[in-house]
Every structure is written in structure tokens, then in C-alpha cells.
Amino acid sequence: MEKGKVKVVNEVGLHARPAALFVAKAASFKSDIRIHNATKDGKWVSAKSILGVLTLGVEKDHEIEITAEGADEAEAVKQIIALIENDFA
Image (cartoon, rainbow, N blue to C red; front, side):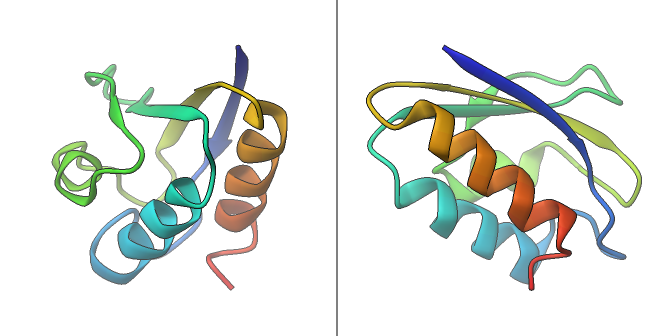
């Protein structure tokens, strides 16, 4: 299992367009990927579920934790963290 934490720098957090980009990136991997809002100590949800991600209420400067388990787990966590750190660019 691969784990990572990252601070969300996007002005709107993980809402609407950023959430859609996040879910699309997660869905491009075979691994089971889960996410939670570490700032609010939120529940864990599938990173491949747009509704799940939106329910976390991730805002700017919140820290999220990501776990991945599967064949491409290390690359999945690395690329998802890079997406967030680069403000979804």
C-alpha cells in the first residue's frame, strides 16, 4: 500500500472542475485509490467517485490523504499528488 498527503492549493478546493480532474486522474489507474480530508478528519471515499470526492468538503489549504493499493499504486499516488501541487494544470 502506498500513502501520501498533500495540501490543496486550488482556490475552490476539490469542487466542480478540480474534482472532475482529480477523479479522472484516479480512474486512469488500476489500483484501488481512496482519499479523505485529513483537515476535517473526514471519512474515506473512493478517489474514482465524483460524488464521494465532493462529499469530503475539501477547501483551499485543506490537507488530504491518499492511499492506493494495486499494481500501479506508487505511480498513482505520485501523479495525483503532482496534479494537486500543480493546481490541476
